Image (cartoon, rainbow, N blue to C red):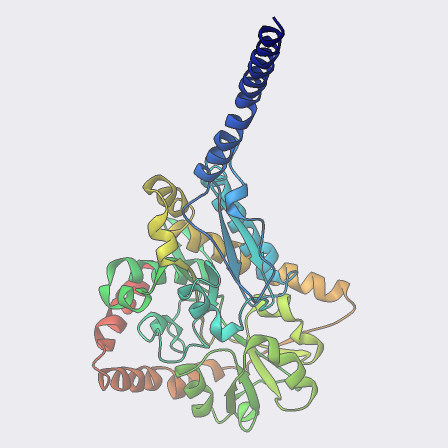
Length: 398
């Protein structure tokens, strides 16, 4: 009887242990399920950099519909409150996010916080950043056919696009983007990245420490030039001593007396306040420079076709026109002059003496084009073909 009682107790204890184990099993099985959901939400792209603090991991974010969000670092050289940063770069990034329904999230890294001005393009190639906006001027010899429109006195001072009168940046950006879309020779230069669009600045003019009204006033001036190649050649032919300087270095160089003047456009003034060092501006149309907005090619190729299409809906000619009109449009001059006055600063605009502009074009216009074509052909580049295409487009849109 005693043995039976003990046996019953053992059986009851075993049963309770089994029941307890069964009651805990649903809770433990739910953990792997949750972890699996988190893993499946991870997007195919990751971004890593040691040069700047990383934004929130893309693996931890998703759209309202639950789709993964791809986070992109956008590296550029402009200060956070610079004219083109506020007017163009930040709003365009928001356009991309809106167009993709939040599937892309762009975090801006301004002021060379990821890479220096001359290194931003390679930073994108190497995926330290996934996007950038660069001037071609710091990359001498790398995009020679793309830079054709920056030849002195070649760009239009204004034109007609789709039956509407537009300013110089808009018409020259239209020409530049059309060149890229139709000429394999130019597309080849950007093959290491996904080029989203090209655009041009408004025309450059001269600001200086003393008024400049003619070629004689130009002679001997130490002029900072934000471009390279033909733009340097133009100033040399006019008798100046030009030197290439990156935009952020110009202000201090002027303060220290290293330079007497700088060739600028209105957006440069709005961004870098050069007028505080160079208070005189000479109203002249000399040349434009070009900019490119690009994305890492591997990142681009991993995007789904619908997201790629959504990005391009605000890129191409649409992106070129947006950049031209917001950062370099007709209103830029008035807005920037108003800000200069509000800051208690000044910029006195003077005109060239009669006939001086034509003299400058004769001395430093077509002669520089001819030299550029010869130099490019010596490198087996089809410069004459590209220049001819530009001239046909300027005739089409002027």
